[in-house]
Image (tube, rainbow, N blue to C red):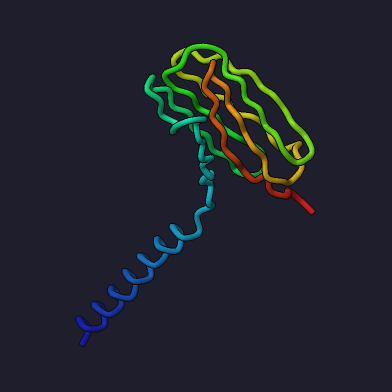
Amino acid sequence: MKTKLYFTIALICSALLSSSFVSAETNKVNDQQDKIAFSKSGGTTRGVTGVEVTGTTDGKTNVTISVTDYTGTAIVQIIGGRTSAQYYMEVDEMGYEVINIGTLRAATYTIRIILGNEVYEGTFVKETVGR
């Protein structure tokens, strides 16, 4: 009888312990960023030269741009929401830039990245923060 009691208590404890791990996993803060889908004028985001452009946004404060296999100045234009902004980033084989969008009003924006003669465009949504 004592063996069954100890076995039952051990089973209940292990069930409670494993459920606490599961609930800790599901309560994680979603810090994933949304990818910005870029399209190249006249093709895909991966050209014959191997240039690759990627972008992500958290929708509230930052847009992150990454350019690989390119050397030169990249021009980043953000257009929409009754405003526009232009940024420059120097790329030497690989470039990474974080752009603060916290001051932009909530709207859908077009982001354009110009690398020499190649133009990459995508869209992202700036969400309302606060109120």
